[in-house]
Length: 297
Image 1 (cartoon, rainbow, N blue to C red):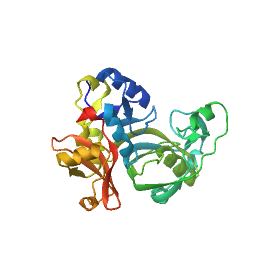
Image 2 (tube, rainbow, N blue to C red):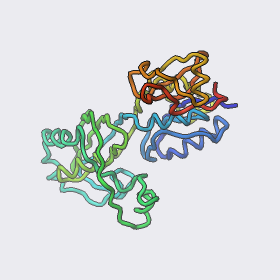
Image 3 (cartoon, helix red, strand yellow):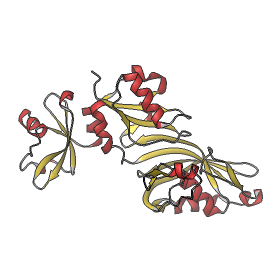
Image 4 (cartoon, rainbow, N blue to C red):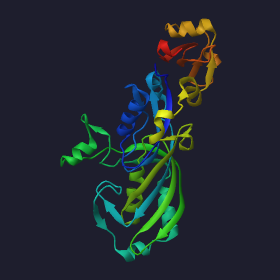
């Protein structure tokens, strides 16, 4: 039987997140595989993959903050806000050349912090039960609602000026649900020249870093993080006695035990070091928010 765990995979460009899931299924010999957070085919970098019972942990990972490295091209607008789309507008070269470094910094500062962002129309967001990108491809007009996101870091790493475009290599720390393509689009719009992404790489999801990931061709030999180790990185671990572990697995509350946790949720570990599940405070008690399958003990 395949052991439940978390795999960190470095997705190459040209593959969808679903492609990576399909390859993982073949490599580990089970269909029970999922991921925490889609990457566009053009993008590379970290996918957090759950295997068997550890897929239940993905709910607690998908909302984590993320870090991206990207290249923004100012001076061109595309249909998809990235290099996979068709160029629909090119700014006047003189106007692009006239953009001062201070304007770049000012534009990025305006897109840093708690902001309201309209996601790219070509996205996986569902509109009336259908993916926005499917609606766009079908020729329908899609207007997505603005959403509150947090961009805690948006720094320029390097700048390259050509005849009619400016390429900015940037690093972005942001909340889940932030679209880096939309940042490129909005920066270009604010400068009056348009913009899109030419590269995107996700380097971090919460506590998980792409430096610890495996390549797509090394999945069969990869050693996943155990469910207990992965969960303990996501939420504070809490050691349980054998009796407490049994009660939690049977759906019973631990009466008067809420004071054992400083956070709302925690990771419950049994005496053998196995993951019982995720526990939450409920009044003065602790109760299971998610239990791992019995066979994972």
